[in-house]
Image (cartoon, rainbow, N blue to C red; front, side):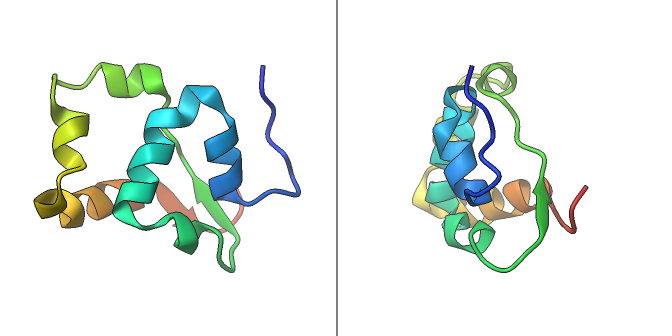
Amino acid sequence: NAQVDASATITENIENLPQLSTAATLIKAAGIDTTLMGNGPFTVFVPTNAAFNKLAPGTVDGLQQKDQKAQLVRTLTFHAVPGKY
């Protein structure tokens, strides 16, 4: 079991947790990985791979298409809030 590293950024922690690999991929595709490394604090509610697997087939792949980037960014930012919770 991987643990959260308090000295790492949010993005680094997401990337280091195998159960969050789909979220890590989508965060990079959206280009918000650098935002999450910025000045915070931020709290991010990250869906696990199991949660993404419950979406309709093709949803995750569809969100990674260039023409869906705005939708992807909107969707992911619904999962982030300023502050530490």
